[in-house]
Image (cartoon, rainbow, N blue to C red):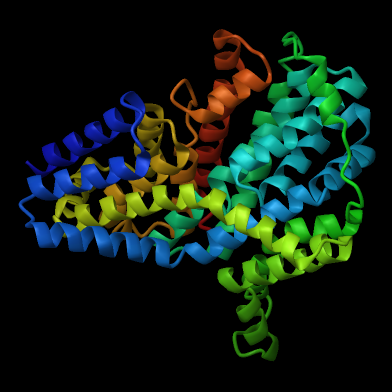
Length: 439
């Protein structure tokens, strides 16, 4: 009976989000109430589970997600992202432009949420394709594959950050392992896969190219652009790397532990960005504040999705459903890393949203994963990889790619959907290799 209740709840969630197109947060709430009711919980217990689930999930994420959105917006609006891309193009040159674009996509993708990152890099893609006369998808795929990897694998992006919190994984270690996995995955799904796409020649309006060549007045310097975009990565990694070389009692470790805390690291990054990308460029504090407020409003939609997933996870826990599921999964003798990837991949294919897929998967598997004795950081990456599996018509990213690059449905499946599948399977392979190396 508990298995039937959980399965029915997931099917109902899929129908509400993918078929009826209902709001994701309200869908999670409705499913949480139904699952709690079917499980025999009384009204007070259901309401308490929903409230505590939302509070415990968002409580530790609001600072990171909010500050991450602010940093990304400042990097984009100031012209720092354009500076990074232009400099990498100069370094790599035309013969190796795919590799430069992949690296640019990863650097820009760390502070920027996926949709914002997509909108920011598309003008660069159009401009580069126009000036170099290279096929558009040959230029686009390396950059967009890197954005996708950052979205699924790397904090401070919503899904990997929320999954890391639920699994009590170190944000710093997750970021480091994510970078290690990201490099070969981006190589496969980006530059190498893009080399097969020269035969596609989508026809894009010339006005789009003209718009993409516009410049931002008074942009920051190249060095400042790189440092600020990568600052969360630098600060989050300092303490983790230092533990390999310095004893915990070393005087520097206390300071490194302080600035390596995810909340503090993001706060420091935003303060530096406000000064370097805002005030030093002649913007008033009022203008900078408006940018930050607008950025927080945009990420609030993602926060509501995470809140709904938190409510669903808590109802599964309080109703005893995920303990029951954990006992079943333990009998299947499937490795936890593969199980996390499979569940996330199935939900992704059914629902479309990578964030919803990752958070729903961890809610279902939580007790099983806690008993698995597998590295929680690798578990985060495995679920993140599964949540990117085979993007198709129920995913907003699929339609963004199709419409921006003026592709047919068949062409979008053969380019975008395959790219996402390579990212997902390649991510699982990378995680598995790290597991075999006893990371």
